Length: 226
Image (cartoon, rainbow, N blue to C red):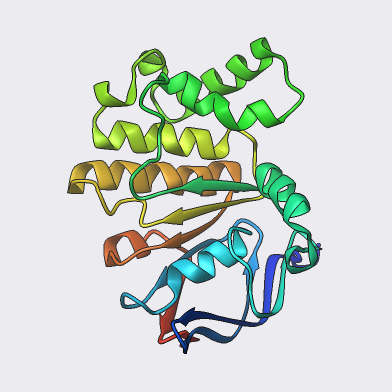
């Protein structure tokens, strides 16, 4: 068997923002590939463009120029509606501050992305229960976020991210709000998702210990890939 096609190709990507009359260049001529099943860490100082790059790959933001192909689809050519539909099916999001809905239980939070699918309520609950078991929280499915530790909340967020079986997982500082023990548990879980389920993960981090879990590290300096 020959080598696998890359799951994502980033080609001559440029992004800038306007601040008053000033144009701030955030990313400049970024080109690289991400292999299927890779665990990639994006590092660099604050303001280097890491989160912007992650958001572009995830289809949250739009590039000024260049192309982003994920699973063979050029997402830069999609309309807003098409992009929203593509994101729902193809991207799992893990945020620094979990972004759980406080009035929903763990299982209801995990079920949320499945509301956009054609699954029945019973099927949605089965899927949500299975991924909560996968992240070691089968005993906490009826707990609300406020009844869970930070590490447990992040595991619920990871379960929510993988419940739709997305093509890529994008994680923005997933351990940034956790103590060292909880951070290690979350990183081990992400490592298992990558190793056992073959999930492609792109993670922005400031933490060298988190980056050490990745297969590859790419560093951004002032919007340029070094």
